[in-house]
Amino acid sequence: MPCLDGLASHVVAFFLTKFIKITTMPPHIREAMILTVELFQLHTSVNLDEMDDFTGFRYVSRLARTLPINNAEDYATIESWIELDHKLEYELQIQNSIIPIIEKVETSLEKSSTGWLEDMEDPSAADFCWKMRLKYLEQLNYMNFNRYVNIMDYLIKEL
Image 1 (tube, one colour):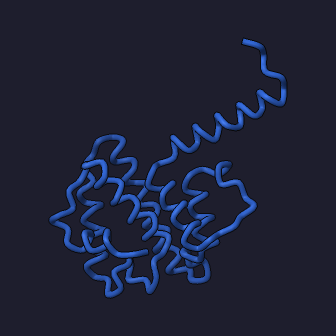
Image 2 (cartoon, rainbow, N blue to C red):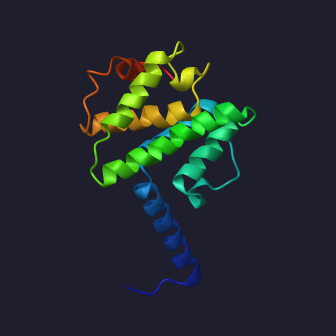
């Protein structure tokens, strides 16, 4: 097989890094980013593949205005839900129980009059993140949400 010239090797390296980035990103975060970009028809000159997964998600969420940066209290609340998703990812990796985290989601939804996490008027970045996370857990048959009535309603709710 002939050696690749400089340009061809850069092109191959570029596509390999893109492929690795896409396949190693947590699937629910990739889906949340894609859904946010599509719903809000975002156009950005920033290369999201150069950011870590959650930084890219936060960036897209700011553009879509689903991350309330003008309200410090709401921002901190939404950030805490995104951080809780990090925690859930860690718990899954070390094979700990995620039931307490799922029950926290259920409780928040139960208290919500809007059906969104933390009773936000519109879906926030936390909702994009958690809705995709819960769907992902369900698709993998990792968790049966039948006993969580509010989560079941949340999963069918349109973003």
